[in-house]
Length: 245
Ligand code: SAH
Image (cartoon, rainbow, N blue to C red; front, side, top):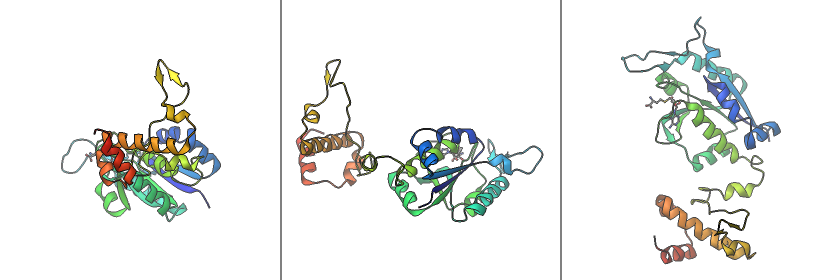
């Protein structure tokens, strides 16, 4: 199986390369599980001043990214990866979550992410160039780079071989519809705070049940919306009924 091919279009390439050079994603790139092409939108301008943005028609505040360099940059990516799924990072896009990450990981082999800046991009990009818009949440950040990195990171973690231990992905928060259980490492006692005894007991079944209960407890406290939708066993329901909300 070849690499999953990412292409990122941005005015700030160094922001993208910095994050994607270290840790799990840096290793995945070195191993060839993923490949990342970072493209400077400004390289695709053709005027003397290399202008990537301009004033908005209609007299709104701020600047808008011009269509020409973005169209050209996408066409350049398509020459190499004709199948690439083209995504615009936008607070007006479809909300991104773990299910969306899995869908992309399973449904595509190449994805191009366009990072907006300023007030965003010319609407002709939205209407005629891209396949979808993705938002990382209901807030506005200054550029699409951070959002694109969130998507590259979350989707790449779902690809086989990126995270060393596949179980660490499937036990992550959201994967099973609820949050991950609390975790402890050494020392066993820190400033009088003890690691729960059951975790030291060696009883795998009891440990698993304890962790499930703690995960449910935390999910109900922080994310009651997830509990409503989660698949719960009889034991799960008994436990939640037994402890106070
Ligand atoms: N004026 C726009 C926001 C522009 S923010 C609006 O009100 O909708 C500048 C750029 O940052 C956007 O073009 C987009 O690429 C990125 N961005 C900001 N918030 C984002 C979010 N929640 N999700 C994804 N991208 C976001």
